[in-house]
Length: 242
Image (cartoon, rainbow, N blue to C red; front, top):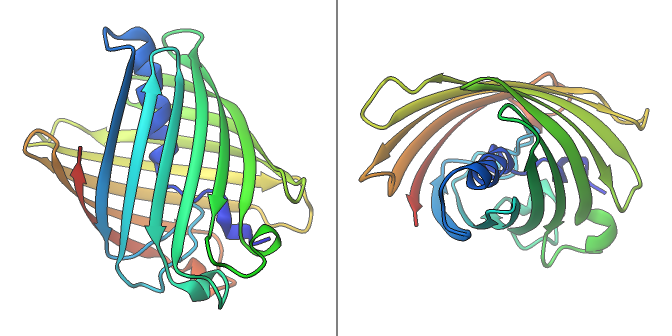
């Protein structure tokens, strides 16, 4: 199985955890649905792996959440087949479901099931597709800063790894719908044949029309230097939210 399949989404899971957590405490409807369509200059996974050979991609997502803390997500993207398998058709589909529970105002727990699908790929079960579960805790020790500790286990390879992540909102006070974030994560696999990873990112986003449209610029890099697929990357996305 390909090592890069896990950690496909950049920020998406953390955003869903925040939405589900907020829905538990804030005055809100019993459930909600949202989504967006994005055009990106390239596709780089949150593990830092280049999936589109620096070519533009189209990505879409639909999120559903309930005030109990349950949520579901459908995410899809185009990509360069050479990054996965010569017979791949260039479409990725990710299905995720999770639950978030607030223990206190600053401490929450979460559990996530993920299925990462590459339709049309040769021998998908062994070569490309991946299914896993993740559980962990998130400590928001400042209003805009949090630390997450989680364990992930892959159903197919029966392998697992632990991750420690730090995320902070650099500034929301820019005004005019501009926000900035930065973060760093460390992943240690339990399998000795896999390498430890450190990833860091920075991003700035500008929203328009009360959040209906946005432009996002981010930088992603890792400590991996054994492949061109892990080169540092600048990514710009243009999004429509609904």
